[in-house]
Amino acid sequence: MYLYLLGLVVLYYLYRWVRELPRVSDKNNRYVYITGCDSGFGNLLAQHLDKQGFRVIASCFTERGEEELKKSCSSNLITTHLDVRSQDSIAKVAYVHCPTRGENTLDRVYSNLKQAYKAVPLPHLGMSDHRSLSSFAYTTLSRKNQTCDKDSSVFGRISAIGGPYTVSKFGVEAFSDSIRINMAPFGVKVLCIEPGFFKTQMASSEVVCNNIKMLWEKLPQESFICSHLGDADLMKVVHCMEHAVAAVRRRTRYSPGWDAKLFRLPLSYMPTCVSDYILQMEAIPIAKQIE
Image 1 (cartoon, one colour):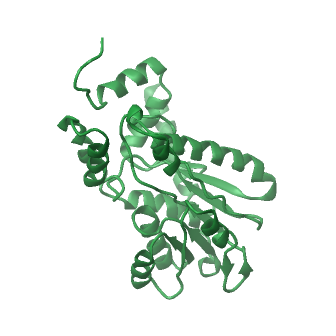
Image 2 (cartoon, helix red, strand yellow; image 1 turned 120 degrees about the horizontal axis):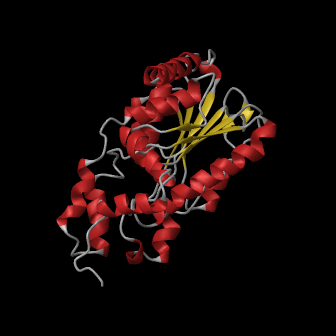
Protein backbone atom coordinates (compact mmCIF):
# COMPACT_ATOMS: atom_id res chain seq x y z
CA MET A 1 0.00 0.00 0.00
CA TYR A 2 2.82 2.38 0.85
CA LEU A 3 4.35 1.72 -2.56
CA TYR A 4 1.07 2.74 -4.22
CA LEU A 5 1.02 5.97 -2.21
CA LEU A 6 4.65 6.65 -3.11
CA GLY A 7 3.84 5.97 -6.75
CA LEU A 8 0.93 8.44 -6.65
CA VAL A 9 3.17 11.12 -5.12
CA VAL A 10 5.81 10.55 -7.83
CA LEU A 11 3.15 10.69 -10.57
CA TYR A 12 1.72 13.90 -9.14
CA TYR A 13 5.08 15.70 -9.11
CA LEU A 14 5.92 14.33 -12.58
CA TYR A 15 2.58 15.61 -13.90
CA ARG A 16 3.15 19.02 -12.28
CA TRP A 17 6.66 19.25 -13.70
CA VAL A 18 5.47 18.48 -17.26
CA ARG A 19 2.48 20.82 -16.91
CA GLU A 20 4.68 23.74 -15.81
CA LEU A 21 7.31 23.32 -18.55
CA PRO A 22 5.77 25.53 -21.30
CA ARG A 23 7.07 29.12 -21.39
CA VAL A 24 5.69 32.23 -23.05
CA SER A 25 6.95 32.72 -26.61
CA ASP A 26 6.91 36.53 -26.96
CA LYS A 27 9.43 37.46 -24.27
CA ASN A 28 10.77 40.43 -26.25
CA ASN A 29 7.37 42.11 -26.09
CA ARG A 30 6.62 41.48 -22.40
CA TYR A 31 7.28 44.22 -19.85
CA VAL A 32 8.16 43.33 -16.26
CA TYR A 33 8.31 45.99 -13.54
CA ILE A 34 10.51 45.04 -10.54
CA THR A 35 10.95 46.98 -7.30
CA GLY A 36 13.91 46.80 -4.90
CA CYS A 37 16.61 46.20 -7.51
CA ASP A 38 19.58 47.74 -5.67
CA SER A 39 20.61 44.33 -4.34
CA GLY A 40 19.36 40.88 -3.37
CA PHE A 41 16.55 39.04 -5.13
CA GLY A 42 15.28 42.07 -7.06
CA ASN A 43 18.72 42.77 -8.52
CA LEU A 44 19.32 39.14 -9.49
CA LEU A 45 15.84 38.82 -11.01
CA ALA A 46 16.29 41.97 -13.11
CA GLN A 47 19.60 40.67 -14.51
CA HIS A 48 18.21 37.17 -15.08
CA LEU A 49 15.06 38.32 -16.91
CA ASP A 50 17.07 40.80 -18.99
CA LYS A 51 19.28 37.92 -20.18
CA GLN A 52 16.14 35.90 -20.93
CA GLY A 53 14.98 38.65 -23.29
CA PHE A 54 12.23 40.31 -21.25
CA ARG A 55 11.74 44.07 -21.22
CA VAL A 56 12.65 44.92 -17.63
CA ILE A 57 11.78 48.16 -15.83
CA ALA A 58 13.76 48.10 -12.58
CA SER A 59 13.24 50.54 -9.71
CA CYS A 60 16.11 51.27 -7.33
CA PHE A 61 16.40 53.30 -4.14
CA THR A 62 19.82 54.79 -4.96
CA GLU A 63 21.45 56.25 -8.08
CA ARG A 64 24.40 53.94 -7.49
CA GLY A 65 22.08 50.95 -7.66
CA GLU A 66 20.69 52.18 -10.98
CA GLU A 67 24.15 52.74 -12.46
CA GLU A 68 25.52 49.35 -11.39
CA LEU A 69 22.43 47.55 -12.71
CA LYS A 70 22.69 49.29 -16.09
CA LYS A 71 26.34 48.22 -16.37
CA SER A 72 25.45 44.53 -15.87
CA CYS A 73 22.40 44.48 -18.19
CA SER A 74 21.54 45.21 -21.82
CA SER A 75 20.31 48.50 -23.22
CA ASN A 76 16.72 47.20 -23.09
CA LEU A 77 16.63 47.55 -19.31
CA ILE A 78 15.09 50.75 -17.93
CA THR A 79 15.73 51.98 -14.40
CA THR A 80 13.62 54.28 -12.23
CA HIS A 81 13.95 55.73 -8.73
CA LEU A 82 11.55 54.53 -6.03
CA ASP A 83 11.42 55.31 -2.32
CA VAL A 84 8.55 53.31 -0.77
CA ARG A 85 8.55 55.65 2.24
CA SER A 86 7.55 58.60 0.05
CA GLN A 87 4.03 58.89 -1.36
CA ASP A 88 5.32 61.35 -3.99
CA SER A 89 7.91 58.82 -5.17
CA ILE A 90 5.27 56.08 -5.37
CA ALA A 91 2.92 58.38 -7.30
CA LYS A 92 5.62 59.12 -9.91
CA VAL A 93 6.08 55.43 -10.79
CA ALA A 94 2.45 54.35 -10.35
CA TYR A 95 1.88 54.74 -14.08
CA VAL A 96 4.86 53.26 -15.87
CA HIS A 97 5.57 54.21 -19.49
CA CYS A 98 6.42 51.25 -21.74
CA PRO A 99 8.33 52.55 -24.81
CA THR A 100 6.56 50.34 -27.39
CA ARG A 101 3.09 50.45 -25.83
CA GLY A 102 2.47 53.59 -23.81
CA GLU A 103 1.48 54.22 -20.20
CA ASN A 104 0.60 51.50 -17.72
CA THR A 105 0.71 48.54 -20.11
CA LEU A 106 2.76 46.12 -18.04
CA ASP A 107 2.50 42.33 -18.25
CA ARG A 108 4.08 41.57 -14.87
CA VAL A 109 4.69 43.51 -11.67
CA TYR A 110 7.12 42.05 -9.14
CA SER A 111 6.85 43.76 -5.75
CA ASN A 112 10.04 43.31 -3.74
CA LEU A 113 9.80 45.92 -0.96
CA LYS A 114 12.43 45.72 1.73
CA GLN A 115 13.72 47.73 4.65
CA ALA A 116 16.11 47.12 7.53
CA TYR A 117 15.96 43.60 8.91
CA LYS A 118 15.16 43.84 12.62
CA ALA A 119 14.93 40.29 13.87
CA VAL A 120 14.96 41.03 17.56
CA PRO A 121 12.55 40.42 20.45
CA LEU A 122 9.36 42.46 20.10
CA PRO A 123 9.53 44.32 23.48
CA HIS A 124 12.79 45.98 22.41
CA LEU A 125 11.27 47.69 19.36
CA GLY A 126 9.55 51.07 19.17
CA MET A 127 6.75 52.35 16.95
CA SER A 128 9.24 53.84 14.46
CA ASP A 129 10.70 50.36 13.87
CA HIS A 130 7.25 49.04 12.99
CA ARG A 131 6.44 51.92 10.68
CA SER A 132 9.67 51.45 8.72
CA LEU A 133 8.67 47.90 7.78
CA SER A 134 4.93 48.35 7.39
CA SER A 135 4.84 50.47 4.23
CA PHE A 136 3.22 48.98 1.14
CA ALA A 137 3.33 50.38 -2.38
CA TYR A 138 0.12 49.80 -4.33
CA THR A 139 0.85 49.53 -8.04
CA THR A 140 -1.97 50.23 -10.49
CA LEU A 141 -2.85 47.37 -12.81
CA SER A 142 -5.26 48.23 -15.58
CA ARG A 143 -4.57 45.75 -18.38
CA LYS A 144 -6.33 42.43 -18.47
CA ASN A 145 -4.36 39.22 -18.02
CA GLN A 146 -1.67 40.90 -15.96
CA THR A 147 0.20 39.20 -13.13
CA CYS A 148 1.40 40.75 -9.88
CA ASP A 149 4.08 38.82 -7.98
CA LYS A 150 4.47 39.66 -4.29
CA ASP A 151 7.73 38.90 -2.50
CA SER A 152 6.66 37.55 0.87
CA SER A 153 8.45 35.04 3.10
CA VAL A 154 7.85 31.76 4.84
CA PHE A 155 7.77 33.99 7.95
CA GLY A 156 4.47 35.27 6.61
CA ARG A 157 3.08 31.81 7.35
CA ILE A 158 4.61 31.32 10.80
CA SER A 159 6.16 33.96 13.06
CA ALA A 160 9.55 32.54 14.02
CA ILE A 161 11.26 35.85 14.79
CA GLY A 162 10.15 38.94 16.64
CA GLY A 163 9.27 42.40 15.49
CA PRO A 164 7.76 44.10 12.46
CA TYR A 165 9.45 41.91 9.84
CA THR A 166 6.98 39.06 10.29
CA VAL A 167 4.13 41.55 10.79
CA SER A 168 4.85 43.04 7.35
CA LYS A 169 5.09 39.59 5.76
CA PHE A 170 1.76 38.49 7.23
CA GLY A 171 0.40 41.75 5.81
CA VAL A 172 1.78 40.91 2.36
CA GLU A 173 0.10 37.49 2.52
CA ALA A 174 -3.27 38.97 3.54
CA PHE A 175 -3.03 41.76 0.94
CA SER A 176 -2.10 39.25 -1.79
CA ASP A 177 -5.01 36.96 -0.90
CA SER A 178 -7.40 39.91 -0.96
CA ILE A 179 -6.40 41.38 -4.31
CA ARG A 180 -6.11 37.90 -5.89
CA ILE A 181 -9.81 37.32 -5.18
CA ASN A 182 -10.95 40.90 -5.89
CA MET A 183 -9.01 41.30 -9.15
CA ALA A 184 -9.71 37.81 -10.58
CA PRO A 185 -12.81 39.01 -12.52
CA PHE A 186 -10.55 41.49 -14.36
CA GLY A 187 -8.07 38.80 -15.41
CA VAL A 188 -5.37 39.95 -12.98
CA LYS A 189 -3.45 37.12 -11.28
CA VAL A 190 -1.60 37.54 -8.00
CA LEU A 191 1.22 35.17 -7.02
CA CYS A 192 3.21 34.96 -3.79
CA ILE A 193 6.89 34.01 -3.41
CA GLU A 194 7.59 32.64 0.09
CA PRO A 195 11.33 31.90 0.37
CA GLY A 196 12.94 30.39 3.43
CA PHE A 197 16.07 31.79 5.08
CA PHE A 198 18.61 32.87 2.45
CA LYS A 199 21.92 34.70 2.85
CA THR A 200 20.97 38.00 1.24
CA GLN A 201 22.61 41.31 2.12
CA MET A 202 19.60 42.15 4.29
CA ALA A 203 19.99 38.93 6.29
CA SER A 204 23.79 38.99 6.57
CA SER A 205 25.26 38.38 10.01
CA GLU A 206 26.77 41.89 10.02
CA VAL A 207 23.41 43.62 9.45
CA VAL A 208 21.56 41.38 11.89
CA CYS A 209 24.20 41.73 14.59
CA ASN A 210 24.37 45.52 14.22
CA ASN A 211 20.62 45.74 14.73
CA ILE A 212 20.82 43.46 17.74
CA LYS A 213 23.67 45.44 19.31
CA MET A 214 21.75 48.68 18.93
CA LEU A 215 18.82 47.32 20.94
CA TRP A 216 20.34 44.74 23.22
CA GLU A 217 24.06 45.16 23.85
CA LYS A 218 24.37 42.26 26.28
CA LEU A 219 22.81 39.66 23.95
CA PRO A 220 24.51 36.22 24.26
CA GLN A 221 26.56 34.89 21.34
CA GLU A 222 24.02 32.14 20.70
CA SER A 223 22.04 34.69 18.69
CA PHE A 224 24.64 34.58 15.94
CA ILE A 225 23.48 31.10 14.96
CA CYS A 226 21.24 32.69 12.31
CA SER A 227 24.27 33.41 10.13
CA HIS A 228 24.94 29.67 9.78
CA LEU A 229 21.39 28.69 8.78
CA GLY A 230 20.92 30.72 5.61
CA ASP A 231 21.06 29.19 2.13
CA ALA A 232 23.72 30.87 0.00
CA ASP A 233 22.16 29.82 -3.33
CA LEU A 234 19.93 32.82 -4.08
CA MET A 235 19.17 31.48 -7.57
CA LYS A 236 16.71 29.02 -6.04
CA VAL A 237 14.46 31.99 -5.34
CA VAL A 238 15.23 33.70 -8.65
CA HIS A 239 14.27 30.56 -10.61
CA CYS A 240 10.89 30.52 -8.84
CA MET A 241 10.44 34.20 -9.67
CA GLU A 242 11.42 33.55 -13.29
CA HIS A 243 8.89 30.71 -13.52
CA ALA A 244 6.18 33.00 -12.15
CA VAL A 245 7.01 35.48 -14.92
CA ALA A 246 7.76 33.24 -17.91
CA ALA A 247 5.64 30.10 -17.42
CA VAL A 248 2.36 29.61 -19.23
CA ARG A 249 0.90 27.82 -16.21
CA ARG A 250 2.03 29.32 -12.90
CA ARG A 251 1.53 28.41 -9.27
CA THR A 252 -0.27 30.62 -6.76
CA ARG A 253 2.52 30.18 -4.19
CA TYR A 254 6.21 29.30 -4.42
CA SER A 255 8.27 28.21 -1.40
CA PRO A 256 11.96 28.02 -2.37
CA GLY A 257 14.40 26.66 0.21
CA TRP A 258 14.48 23.31 1.99
CA ASP A 259 13.92 24.94 5.38
CA ALA A 260 10.66 26.40 4.07
CA LYS A 261 9.46 23.15 2.47
CA LEU A 262 10.50 20.66 5.14
CA PHE A 263 10.42 22.65 8.38
CA ARG A 264 8.67 26.03 8.53
CA LEU A 265 5.65 25.33 6.32
CA PRO A 266 4.86 21.97 7.99
CA LEU A 267 5.39 23.69 11.35
CA SER A 268 2.74 26.30 10.44
CA TYR A 269 0.12 23.52 10.18
CA MET A 270 0.94 21.98 13.55
CA PRO A 271 -1.00 22.72 16.76
CA THR A 272 0.03 26.02 18.31
CA CYS A 273 1.39 24.36 21.45
CA VAL A 274 3.73 22.20 19.32
CA SER A 275 4.94 25.02 17.05
CA ASP A 276 5.46 27.36 20.04
CA TYR A 277 7.55 24.73 21.85
CA ILE A 278 9.78 24.12 18.81
CA LEU A 279 10.24 27.83 18.10
CA GLN A 280 11.07 28.58 21.74
CA MET A 281 13.80 25.94 21.59
CA GLU A 282 15.60 27.89 18.85
CA ALA A 283 14.79 31.34 20.23
CA ILE A 284 17.43 33.78 21.52
CA PRO A 285 18.03 32.95 25.21
CA ILE A 286 17.59 35.67 27.81
CA ALA A 287 20.15 36.49 30.50
CA LYS A 288 17.85 35.62 33.39
CA GLN A 289 14.65 33.61 33.38
CA ILE A 290 11.68 35.41 34.95
CA GLU A 291 9.80 33.22 37.38
